[in-house]
Length: 436
Image (cartoon, rainbow, N blue to C red; front, side, top):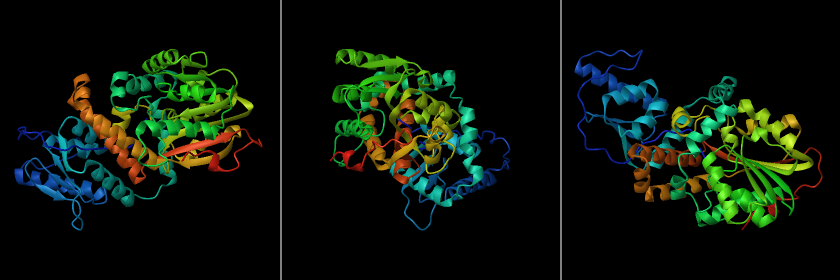
């Protein structure tokens, strides 16, 4: 989401360990013969069926007994997936989108070859093999959002699970300002620090900030954007966040940089924002709201903005409503849902806001994630010391899978600029937005 993506992943080297020859019970509802030969035949058949469901991508699957199943006979394999235990295969058959990530994190799955390339191939082949979105499919997001329970209490628990695992961890691999959202690269060669500065400046330019204006920010992370607006544009900011560790860090930074008279960091839910503001901004929070709560967000924006107010929503999204990968939802981002653009605009339409500009920065997020993954890998020993090997593998999977999702187009990054209905003071062209 920071993110945030619907993906499942693998690793690099098979561990040297003895694999038990005991045959565990198969997943509920699956029956196999008990003879060794027929069991092997069934298991290999199950792998072939799973590869077929993925559109027969060019990958190889190696089983614990050395059996090799090829996904595509017409293309060279991108990588080889090794399944070390029979029990792992049965769990994958039962719930592949959940247990793939768990098996990888536990070292029960490994990959030899290009991990990101493997995952991108799976995304592309799965998309090509799937049916077009239907009305029934469009209803998935509504069912999912109800299950995620982003109420006032539920949101606090969900945010705590991801963002309050320790500022020291995030400082290992984010940029110096701890910006945990998509950067903006006027040129691909830009450093991560410069690209995050450029992203914050891009947001400020789109909002056409003027000195002395008041801004309300929903979901402020570690405070980088709020402090940037105050320092570089002379703005007064009230920033809301329900992550205790992030708010504590942001307040200390504001005091250290002598900006605490211009920026107020409030540890509370965005729905409790009060006051009147010239500008509303939310960068990387909409993913944590859920469609069932979009009307509450829209009502908050409407209540807080002045009659000539304007705003910007920045969010990971999808081309059409679809359920988030259950492993990501359970292990990485509880309560998360990346909306389609139509769903995103549903925040604004009931309140008659005018959409001024929509931009997709998908490729910028893929490059941002590559910077994060490189830094994460370079500091994995420190991460292992803070947590354990399972945690390292879990986050490698999450970051690698997110790169593949943005590269393949499974995920998007939307910026939506809006203002009150009927206002005349609007940007004439996009030229005034962009840097470089």
